[in-house]
Structures are given as structure tokens and as C-alpha cells.
Image (cartoon, rainbow, N blue to C red; front, top):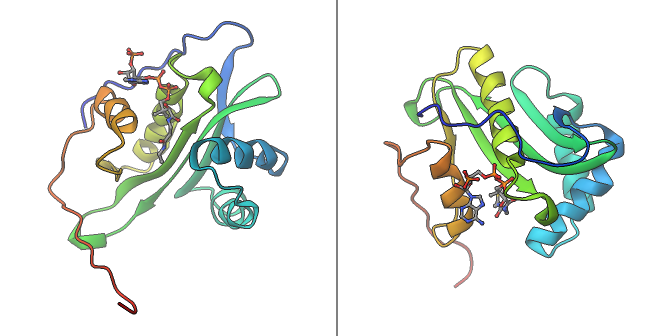
Length: 161
Ligand SMILES: CC(C)(COP(=O)(O)OP(=O)(O)OC[C@H]1O[C@@H](n2cnc3c(N)ncnc32)[C@H](O)[C@@H]1OP(=O)(O)O)[C@@H](O)C(=O)NCCC(=O)NCCS
């Protein structure tokens, strides 16, 4: 991945900082996710918090961008070893920024913080997956230097026809 991730947010008002999620952040995270997906998935987010927030130090990361007490966005990722024959790589599997705080560098700051954590443990590849019709997230990841990699996704619909 090329090194485009911008370190400095373009926000007015309180400084934006990225830190590990806290349990008290979850209502805002859940509400933010609901603005993007239309679904209020409280149980799901409690599970994600237990897996990536509480026990996540080291190889799993659930980070939030905050300005004062307000959560502006989050990113979740983890180091995965030897999947698909690949050396340890950093997977980013969720990133969301509050629509009111977008295009001010918050997404870049979140991804940059995740990248730093991956690099800290020696990871040299950052990966993600996205819906092919989601132009916004594609534009964002491309702006951060991500390009098509050597793995391709395959899928099969299973279950009763
Ligand atoms: C994608 C997302 C995280 C970007 O967050 P952000 O804080 O707005 O991103 P940044 O301000 O750091 O933007 C960085 C770059 O991304 C690109 N980008 C961001 N928003 C864009 C938009 N609306 N249109 C085109 N490109 C855009 C630009 O290249 C931008 O660089 P620039 O500011 O120099 O033009 C945010 O729009 C979002 O949460 N979208 C919905 C999330 C989603 O669909 N998630 C899918 C499941 S994981």
C-alpha cells in the first residue's frame, strides 16, 4: 500500500483524536452504524466490543475518533495470520464517519491510526473488502493508496433454493 494516509484532520472546533473504544462509546457507535446501514444492531455491537474492544489489545483494534465527548467515527481491524497462504496482514473490516463530520480528514485519521498499529507489529500489507457498487468507500480507500491486490473474492449462494 502506498503511503497516502493523511495525518491531519481538517476539522474546526475541538481537536479530533483517535483512541481505543470505551463501553460508554457504544450507543454513539450503534447510532452511527444505523445511519449508514439503517439497522440498529445493539447485540452485534456488544459482541464486537467484547471481541475487539475489551480483549482486542495487540492484534485486534476497535478505535474511535472523538472531538471532545462526541464520537465522530470508528474503525475496526485485526491482524490475521496465514489466511489464504498470506503472511500476517492487517484487515480493516469496518469504517464509518458521522455524515456531519465527513470530508474533513476524520476517515484518513482513523485509517492512519489503524495502519500505525499494524506497522507496530511488523505487518506490511493492509487489506479490506468492499461492495463493488459502493463508490464512496472505493474512492476513500483509493485516496489512501489501496489498490486491487492479488487475492480475489469468490462466493456461492448456499442453502435451500
Ligand atoms: C468513507 C468514509 C469513511 C470517508 O470518511 P471521511 O472522514 O469523509 O474521509 P476523509 O475526509 O479522510 O477523505 C479522504 C479522501 O477520501 C475521498 N473521499 C471522501 N469522501 C468522498 C466523497 N464523498 N466523494 C468522493 N471521494 C471522497 C477523497 O479522496 C478524500 O480526500 P480529499 O479530502 O483530499 O478529497 C465516510 O464517507 C463514510 O463513513 N462512509 C460510509 C461508510 C461505509 O459505507 N462503510 C462501508 C462499510 S465498512
